Length: 504
Image (spheres, rainbow, N blue to C red):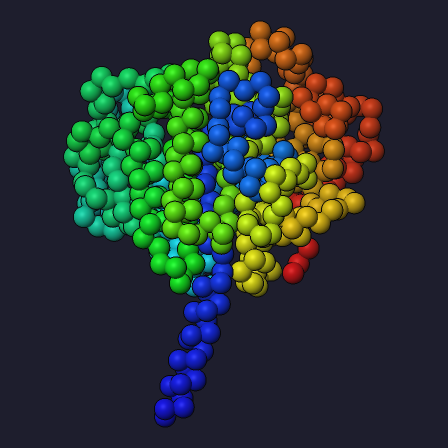
């Protein structure tokens, strides 16, 4: 009997030792941050981001990194699943929307929890909850200011809310769900910390730039949006400070900035030359710095993988910002949030992995946020089933410095709206529609950028070579019909086959 328990104890100790050697993993996910908003990759930037610049100097910066979608919820699903979002949905989760994930679906935190990680999420979830589970019997939507909305008394706030982060692999969660969607309250794990009692009422508070863009709905009395970002920052640092040295952790820190409402705190006023939005980016950078400092102060910096990226490109306010402040949030790229132009989904993408990534590396390799799933699985030695992470490539050899004669990815798919897709293959990008725009730019912006207005709805598609034409000005669709035909066929194959990577 003693020998049996000794064997069990030895096995447990071995597993604990293996877990302790695993790298900690931190994903910092900005919201609506453009490719040109980080100063180290925009020589004309009016915003300085010293902490992100330093992170890039200590790791690798990808100049051709992408989110799956041009809007938030789909990109977040892709990040946490390794699947292109359009295999599940094209849309973002609206107020009181249903969960994106299916029950029991493998996610990044599920995988890491199975490998002994303490998994935590702080910040913007925006992937739905099962709100019906706490809705009072017979509750109906009410008309508030000519809009049909759910009011605070429609829900039993004492009940747990299922379908959120803790039901999808996270041990703990703290956040406000989505800053501009109800309910306006804090949620800890799967319950609100204080019950909303009234409908949205900001009592005359103003943004620093643009509109509030809040959806009407239940709110905790005295809710102050200006406290959201500082609270999330504080909670992320507290999480790091509370982690033991003998158990690996995964933190998904999902920021609410620089997404509208543009509400930088007063201490950041005037810290950029790009208006309040620029100040908000500076605050986002500062918060990143605070988290990095906490990681270093706790002695975790030598064994922590840090990934920084954004869910999509910048919001429509970027047009006026370019004119007023001479700052282009999209950099040299064409397009903004919602678009399948490059500027809608080519985003900041930095990875630091001490001892494995050569500091100061810059890569032009095309990668996608769906690749994080297979990459992390390789690092922690997790065998992914064939029906999971079906679009995810393992980036580990690339991160460790391997040169590829051909692109690592066969191709990448970009999408925001149903039936409108872009396929990237090497230097080429094919769009199966007459325009990549949803966020239509004003005429003066088109003229300043040297772009033609594309409004011929009979056009079958577009083709660009990004090596020679990063700003997507010169359509080559008619010039290279065989290239178009081949890319059309590959896009169709990806859409109908159920996966875009070979089986494992």
